[in-house]
Image (cartoon, rainbow, N blue to C red; front, top):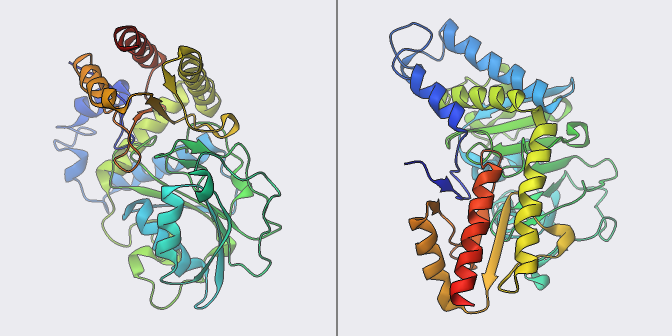
Length: 359
């Protein structure tokens, strides 16, 4: 029986995508083998990869002058790869710290650069984002790094930071493909695939071409953006199955209204869930309203002893992976693109019943 999977990642995939992959698993394109078994150098997979890239460019309206890379190492790997590619030894990099993933990116970057945190929401317990214009971007910074959406705390920017010409780096692992984005505002966008793009094992990097050619000599070749761009992301064997599934997900996005369709779908889900939480008198959300995530919705009950029963009973009702991150507790519903509105409504109905029994 399929369940509604509220995991923060790896997350649920569209049923249509899974069914198509199932149909093609044993015999892909009439070759008598699965896509996992074909050579990444062979014409069929090279065309598959090129098709996925073309679909990504189309769906995201990626302008000319950007390279799309399909790499390994996850978003965490990019925390090191980006400073190694875009900064010189001893150079400073600006960061906005709005949560756990920003914090991890800062810690990793400190191995390679001087990390300058120009805005830090730790004092707010990461319950908000800094207002546009409330921080000063350094004129000599190699770039400004921020996390548009923090999955653990459910905090999301409602604007794109202005940088005064400094390259802007966005860790869009949990928001990519969820709504339209103006790629031209960014020097580089990166995203782990396992939330809105496909299965784990793949990280997508969209980098402006003028930022290539700057990798340090100590940068590993597999993370050298220039080398990977020259090799069409096949300097080494890429994560072929994840790349193939990304193509299927992009086909699904296009068939469901593109990013405008995803935005409408995602806003409706978030509005319904936050609307119920705010009016329930039983559940609360700790994030300031202008910074609430569309993708990750944490919520609390007044009595923490009810958290485990909530998660357990929800799982029995077919609503899985609702425990909050171990570092913050509570509950969290991740409602990425593949989560239908019916799944969110099923969660709301369960929450109502649980509140009636335990309120």
